[in-house]
Length: 457
Ligand code: PMP
Image (cartoon, rainbow, N blue to C red; front, side):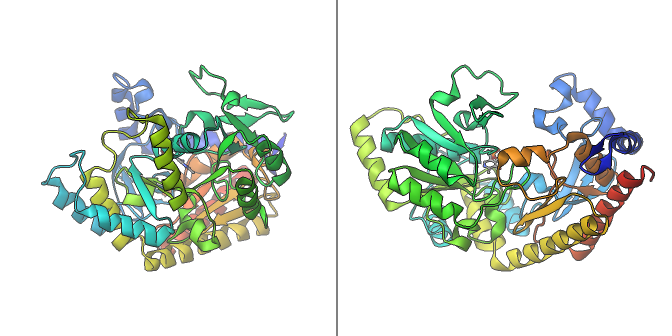
């Protein structure tokens, strides 16, 4: 009986089988809706990611409020997934509700600016420290547009990513290192007709030597990274790493894009403000407008100047950037309300306190049971990883991911009223998260661990 991260694989199988049966028995309406939806949606879902939860069929949601979500069968969940960050400030916060009601009667999208524009600019500049901004509908778009500008400004063809990164579905970021250190397309990538290695480079996170070598040719327009990798388990930067990234990018005329879409969990100004980073481009999406589709990207005065020069060089015509619904009236109003009234220091104080409780509880579970696991955290985001030591880079982090083990835990939690982000073991707290929510999460993870260790319920 092989051990997977300290757990017998036969136990993983039996927990998975038992919990699958339980899920089927308690979710008949989800099952029926899944079946019905299959008539016109492959696998019964409008976005194929919705089948990636490890459930035997997709969970259909009836409603959510604050930190609580209810499915169509009436099962209630304490929500620590929060739409994988999209609802990080809680489901339907009051100020966003008011925006929806007000703007609903005034038209939603005009492809023209509104009175909120100067106020939003000021709020973004004050909060994140960059003087100039643009608004997009998704973090994917914001990253894509910023990277395109970086190429236009520098005239360089490549971008550089860290192994194991995720920045949305931006083509050139889907480069990975293979076991021999060669650059390959991310496994599973569909329809990729050009060789990404011709327009991007990839090195390991926390490896300044490799970064220095990769930037030496001065053919990289922009390095794009999260301050800590959060999409392959969690990889924290070692002391001096982010400073080194800034130093090396500056020394080679390479721009630096910090993607704070997930690490905005750090505090009101993200990791950038908490740790004094100095990016050329700054991106944050998902939760920035309280769950209304919206993303923002900021840039320095020097970049703004260089943009003008690039425009003048290129001449008039279509920029290849923007989407029709970007910065629509509803998104701008929600963005303003979220920055002014929802993403407040008081909200963060609550989120961070609750997440500390999660972190402490998870650490204790691991310690008491001597599991070869660990916990990493970035502010209101915690992750328990089924490997003994915190990984230094994407390759090590990938080795600590164990599909069936994680699926068994997720299903066990869902069957007991807890949602955490699929794909990995990430928890988020929102301003509405309570101590009772945290206690329930921790007790349920403990129950899952005991079931996996003993093989019985
Ligand atoms: N950047 C980061 C760091 C992300 O984690 C994600 C999504 N997980 C994105 C960008 C893309 O966000 P979206 O899917 O909303 O475009």
